Length: 149
Image (cartoon, rainbow, N blue to C red; front, side):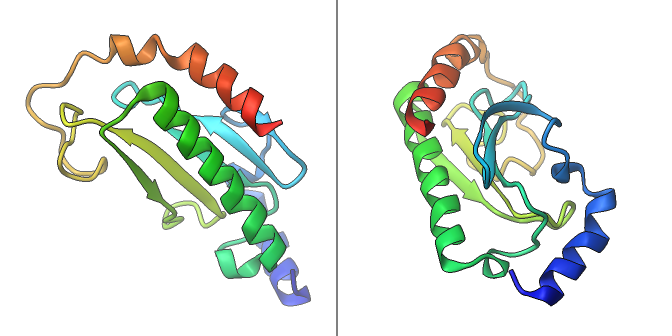
């Protein structure tokens, strides 16, 4: 990280919710990144991969850091696919509200609350029963721990 990026980072971290490594349901933490299981009743299995240091963009990271972060994203995606069996995976890195590098890995189903629209759109009138998907969360957590170590 360059000196100017480090200075910008220091100024932004005070108000950044993702800078606190204890916030959220941390499934796994490495020295560079951590995986959070998002508490979203409509999307059991929704995970975030968060870069630990406060950076705004992928290009603030070195090539090796970008590769490490994306390797974690790919592992989380594969585990979600294996355990949750979604119709599709949505990957997103916005940071509009929280300008701290992180990736969303969201399992999507043809009967989910927003399908076929994005998860931030208005929900459908009839919400699915996600109980069976929620029951898979312990297996998801265990498999993430196994594959991320």
